[in-house]
Amino acid sequence: MRIKMKHSLLVAGLGLMFGAAQLNAAALEGDAAKGKRKAAACAACHGGDGNSKSDQYPKLAGQGERYLVKQMQDVKSGARPIALMSGQLDRSSDQDIADIAAYYASKATTGGQADPDLVELGQSIYRGGISDRGVPACAACHSPTGAGVAAAGFPALAGQHAAYTAQQLQQFRAAADGDASGRSNDGEVRTMRTIAFRMSDREIEAVASYLQGLH
Image: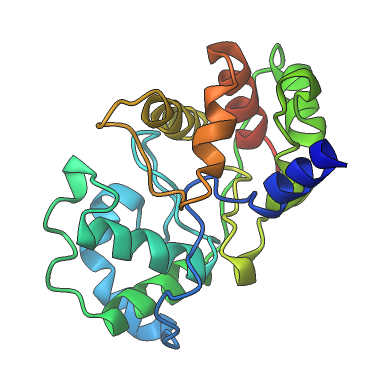
């Protein structure tokens, strides 16, 4: 019963792949039309429609508004330090952030290709987890299609650049290992830090590759 309860709590806290939105996140209604204008400066890295060409930058198109708002707020406050984003949102109001989020959420994500050699392993972990290490199925909160759960702030992962996804998992793992430069904005439950800490480099690479081809 105790083990079952711990597993239930873990599953309940899933979906924080990139730090799901907290319940107290600003609940402002975003205006996509205004957001398009406000996101003009973001296009250089993330693409005009949120589909970045370089795997150095994440695709934002099709991402849930709640998740995007949370991440931008974390970047602005310093809770999620990103060197390339330093100062970019300092003058953005909560409404500006909501509008930008609405704009990117209104766009469609482009797909990608998975490495055929990694598909089987990546699919196995995404859909079934790694039972002997307590790694739950990613699909539990990111959905079988990788669309995430926008209302809950669980991010969409399908079509995301494999290199970016792998980097985020590695950063969560580094934070779990005590590295202050790692990523730790996954909440007090530490869901993604805990999960990533239990995954090998090859497993992270496989899941990331599978997600890039999932569409």
